[in-house]
Length: 177
Length: 283
Image 1 (cartoon, chains in turn yellow, blue):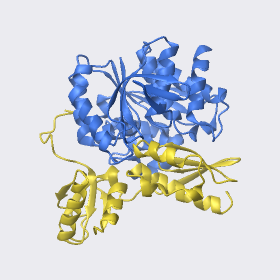
Image 2 (tube, rainbow over the protein chains, first blue to last red):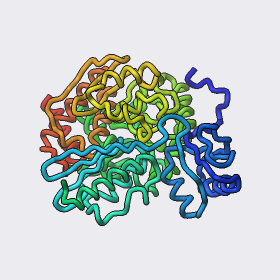
Image 3 (cartoon, one colour):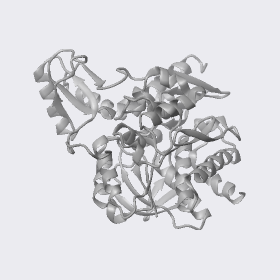
Image 4 (cartoon, chains in turn purple, blue):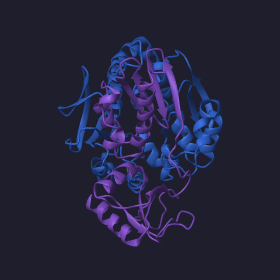
């Protein structure tokens, strides 16, 4: 029954935006729909409720773009959460040393930089379509001279790359170790 | 026919369909030049050089520009939903695209309407969407890395950014545990090609092949080295290899291409792709 759902056109995005008041939820829905985001007003499950009885279901993968748009349009919200599973973004960072280079791994994203110069040598991992875009805009530039990935990315992969980037910047500022 | 679908990071590129050629450092899709960077461009490039080795037709591609805002991805989903049954490829390899569960489901429904169901391969975000939408069993091959393997093993995660910490920490020591969990909850394709310091080929839940030599740690840092494996797998299958033989050949060729290119963390993916024909010619 892979394709057997009765509600063929029912939107399921897996992410929830919580608000403290109903008017905030309605305003946020307008902001997102104006930018062609697929959203749905829903009642949040009791375990996730943190304010009002209305929430917005979004495609969780688009969380970075949604949050940036809310900030640009001054739309108020409490939190963006997954509907199921781990409530927080993966925050485990691993480091791999390559003599002159350092690879920082955050979730499915890896950023490798030259320890002496801070130049970004490679970005690997991930799968969302903003990653090749961020890859070409950051590659061969210094960590200290590029924008944070979450300022230009739209997806959860961009948020994980942002986590790797901030850690890399910190390591580089300590002298690469 | 091998059909590869995905996005490239040039927002002004409309839906572009045609045969792909890899010349110098660039991809040419119906005379549109696309630099060979990490992502679908690298995958297509690797598929091209592999097809050329076998004197096969170049892969057929459908590409669209998308910087991550999803607009191009939605055009690609719509195009596939409308046109896939008429195209009826032998192999459908889906790659970078904004994961949208409902639209991926419709693409799979369209694939089911093809004259013969294509061999379905998914990598990167297409794999995320297929797993999150409960469509993994419809696919023949997934090509996860170890973090993505943990994502397949997590029953609730719809993206690797939200996997449980204990699964992310499992990594290679518990590869079999992750694989068993993924198959138990029907989150795995029939064949998994798990890329890592030790590569694993898994069929129906059992590890049937592992590879760790030549050991080139820098390959993990180079953006696109997973994409090249997926592209080669598609072309090997198009050349008549079994799924298992294609996986073995692609994993071996990728490592040897890294060795030939003397890969360092600063090596670019186009250098690895340029080495692939030399490796294939020596085997």
